[in-house]
Image 1 (cartoon, rainbow, N blue to C red):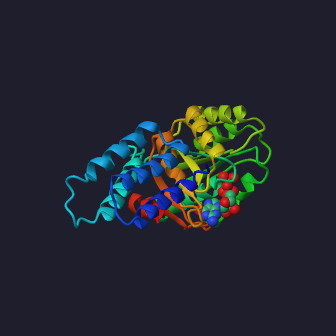
Image 2: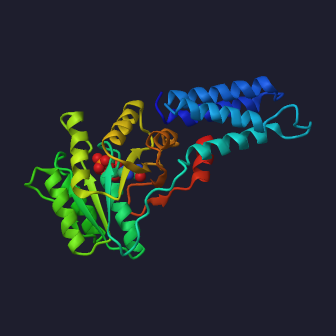
Image 3: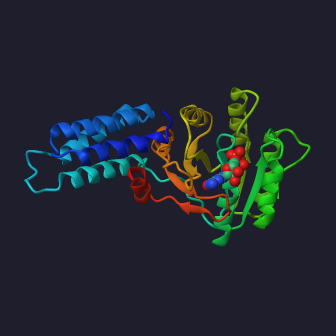
Length: 296
Ligand code: GDP
């Protein structure tokens, strides 16, 4: 199942419950089973799904609910609360501090919106008075440096990269060093999203992380991510210590159901969402509206 379909399955399950004339235990069980199936197929951990079922059943106790209680609303609210809980990994991500140098490394598949998101993240902080800088450590994709350079120039953000150097680890190290000397407080390292060999990509991520010593690694994920890409999220997590997630292209059709799995897999919170191609189409992630959209 494509992860973006989870939200469709969940809202369908809730809709079916809404269409039922009487809400009894069977209707609730059918609804919960449907939701659980969608979450499990999206690789949300079994224990999380089981806890969700148990919690909802505890809240919606048919013996205790007096007649006249709006069971539909209570169930919907309970599902919504549980999804909010799933999006909360229980610990906040590293938060950079203005005036103190932090290195932030971005990882993700090619096409996920990584390069665009690096600039958005830099621009967002620059508007708040930070001194960000961008390092292009993607030497694999032709044009990656030009794209970063163009974005950075437009936003008047210093950047570092090379047309001739082919070693991303060297560029990453040099860029971070230079911007540390220039007292930039937010050094953002954009990395490659594809390689001739998958194993080589993950080894490269590991080496870039080793040389730049990032305070935070952000995993960038397209909101319409498919199952294959999800497996790669796990692979990224295994090679570098992913500490936060950014979901892009939330302006599209996808509802972003994959966020649930990304949070579960990486055990890191979603911190921002991308809502368009422009530099300022970027928002701080807010769990509740996100879940409303997921259920909508
Ligand atoms: P990368 O290969 O991961 O570095 O991806 P890019 O940053 O080059 O982005 C790939 C495409 O997605 C580009 O056409 C971007 O303009 C587009 N893109 C990135 N973020 C968003 C977003 O939030 N919304 C929309 N609609 N497009 C986006």
